[in-house]
Length: 360
Image (cartoon, rainbow, N blue to C red):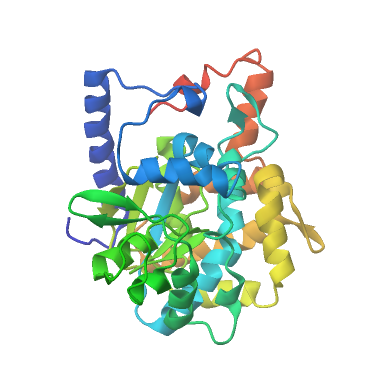
């Protein structure tokens, strides 16, 4: 689809996508299910079979990630290495705020999990070699080369050859470059191998040809377009929503230099320990997470204002897309906490009504 600068266009396109998915789902009887993941059958899909066999070796929640998490992503373009670095740092530091604003996964197998974003918590014990907050992004020497060095050291999953996925779990891409990959001795990687390897890295912000913001839970329709509006404080390329299946609609390049610089100023003196603390605590305590002399809610208020100001400067009458998250910031009550209120109240401690409440 042609790139377009306006969130209005993007949301209209997204609506058409969901209309098509609803039609297909009804036709084949597809629906959401509260069943445990181990009740689900996985067809021989190559890479996912390899991942399913490997993940229990490196974390206790990797299979939960594969089978019962759903995120909504906003992907941000960049114009240069310097632009990438600035956006990467803001994206990582503020990702816990996005996690809190869009927290929407408080249940596991029909019961409260103890977390507001169980999806986010699951990523903390999936595979620490390929997830997390990437402290090196904040080093003075960080750039494309340093990210490549990081990616080279992330253990491999597979190589795709002759329409088959070859198990390379735990092996080194550096060995592959040297022609010493045990699964393919003497063979050298091609560019597709490198691109495939990059898709198996899962930090809170992921660098490819754009920056993926990966911290938000999936949620109801009314909140989907709030996410690109929130991240509009710098720039975005396209939105992808997936439960391990990608659907992309392009949005073009949106920049607001004033909001980006103000965001950099907000996070400038945050320490590694503070950023990691937010990552660790937000899945459980959301906007009520203590931060310095206040709560994360107070930082979210400042960041939301940057997003609103940036949208106003664009002049496309897009600030209304922020209404859903503005209410969360105003009250400090996340979507997950509202679901828990209904669970303990009118739903009578039954999770089944959630499938109607959040139906697209």
